[in-house]
Length: 359
Ligand SMILES: C[S@@+](CC[C@H](N)C(=O)[O-])C[C@H]1O[C@@H](n2cnc3c(N)ncnc32)[C@H](O)[C@@H]1O
Image (cartoon, rainbow, N blue to C red; front, top):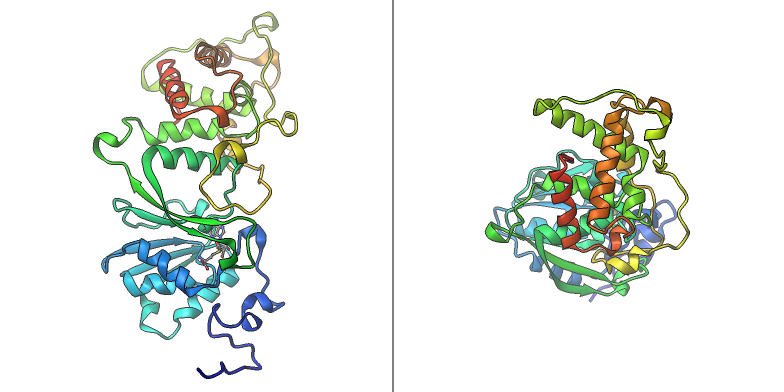
């Protein structure tokens, strides 16, 4: 076999070319570990991953984090269209270049942005099984609120099976852990839990707001109580329930609302171990759940109850309801990472029974 021609312009034909010609070897293009940029260097593995997806010619595939497009080009060989969401402009450009001037270019749509912030997600067929290369969502890590919430949701609404182990040596640069390809089959019919996804997910957002907190601390945070109060007011308005909005005095309130930013004992609980997650991981946990800023915005719509003196009876009612639910279920001192599916189901039913809703 002839030697690959070297090029002074650093013109690597693709990421599978010799390392000296890859973007990684080029100082101008450094892979970012923060974005989990570990690129598959073995075309055989890329091939195997795409094979496991059992794509049909009419399929539209959503690819999260295409990187330099190694999987993208293989998927395009089998599917009608690929919508690839990539947050790094350099990577998005690399993926686009892979098909430039080729007929496949018409069947590839690259969206530059964070997939988590795509609202709504591009349309694709979610009724058929999904094959997920979990490395593709590297910004979610064990211990991350979003990661934990996704884990619980995914397992609750879908059946997940491992279909391929991919060792770390197959990536450049090699990550700290091996990776898995999993098949996610949405549960259907009677298998599907008979509860509202919005309610369930809304409740889990709060449970996993801070990874090391007890449920009591999570649920008695001021931001969370404000959001619950706002939802409760809405529910009462829709159901013609009259609220007692009078101001309470000091004696009536025990004043034990918790600040969301309270310090928590370091090392208390370790979701990385607890969840034994199924996503690829690459190091330290990110402890900044982005949806907390949403909660803050939502909270601002509730009448301010900054000091104890100005707290309304509605606010006190909400706090009493929350504590009652947690204590009745014996979950107040438990951490979300230690709860099982049944605990969360009981929690949702009990909150709903108290007219507390999350969607
Ligand atoms: C592991 S690399 C991609 C590897 C590629 N699929 C392959 O196998 O060669 C992960 C890619 O996801 C991108 N990424 C990480 N988090 C993302 C997010 N939240 N939204 C969109 N892209 C993301 C990174 O920039 C990176 O290009």
